Amino acid sequence: MRTFLIAREFIDQVSNIRTRRALEDALADACARIGLRYFAVSHHVDFSVHSTALRIHNYPGHWAEWYDEHRLGVSDPIHRASQMIANGFTWDEVPRLIAMTASDHALLERSRKMGFGNGVTVPAHVPGERRGSCTFVSAAGEQLPPDALIWAQTVGLFAFQAARRIFSPRLNTRWPRISDRQRDCILLAGRGVRNAEIAVALGIGQQTVLEHLREARARHGVRSRTELVVNLLASGSLCLDDLTRRDD
Image (cartoon, one colour):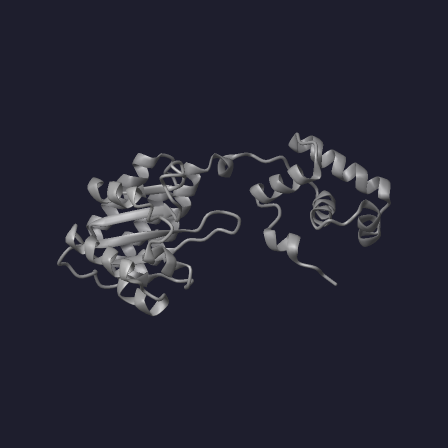
């Protein structure tokens, strides 16, 4: 019951978090209360190239420096394993999820020597964005707390979303509203459908299609259909699946 209470309190707290420092403090407090030492909320990228990508952690500085120096953000076996499963997993499960290489085993062994115990990782993949995850780790020589996986599954996803708000200003953007009919026209235009075909598909005149698209572009302050589609994807008015799915 205590595990769920800590998760519940973190969720209540994180909904109001707007700064990186506040999120770090909230995660450190939640980890300490459950009996975990480290946390990392991160995109899976080479941080020597993508220095502004999402990453919040309290790992030892010497580990982070060595990790970035060897450009392990993409090849990390924990990150690779998270692409093979939808739910959280413990690090003991990684050899079952991916084919481990000698370098993978060496990396995990080095992590143990540098103070890391067992860990639990929760995949956090948002379509159209870089893959990511949230990880919690015990101190060397300590076991994962009871119910750590269930706790991490809940806390990790809320932490990742909070980090997205902090690192992605567009998530806080107030996007212009469009009508349902404008959205229908933009959706079909995004699929490469011509104006005349859009008009037939929606049962409206071709001039009306042009007016809907023109008005939507004006509201978003863009000049092209491509920019309009990108804005609607960013705002959540369209999904990638909408653009690739055909109804015929």
